[in-house]
Image (cartoon, rainbow, N blue to C red):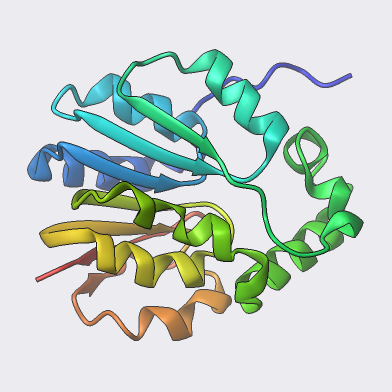
Length: 199
């Protein structure tokens, strides 16, 4: 039986401190996020400067859980399911994708690889923020298809804004990160974040 998800940020203390310091310095009004969860609630709780927080989520069960547990009126949560035939990755969905990740690690890793290498699977999800006509101060890339979310975030974040890529230490993001010279990478570790400043 699965225990209730505690909705804590899925970041280590160093990464969380870097995120908080960035947001404290930036004082963003408009925030974009791919991949909702404990970090969403934490950021909304800590930063009253935020006026509008748009979060894109791909998993319908997780979406409903986030919607139930985060009731802040500044949050606009959108469900955009992935494109293409990904039914054989059913075991990666919530709750197994969260609570039984070790049991399904091989499948979860393959699911992540497919969504990072094939833009067709994440096209709707990645491009949904373009529909809002918002110039964002800050974007957190922390969901599926992060390689494809990065250029969209770059397009939508204003000059002087910041993009954070979570788990930036993963090898599959190295090529994409080379496109952004104004980046800061802390020491490589699990859960590492990369800050990208848009000039």
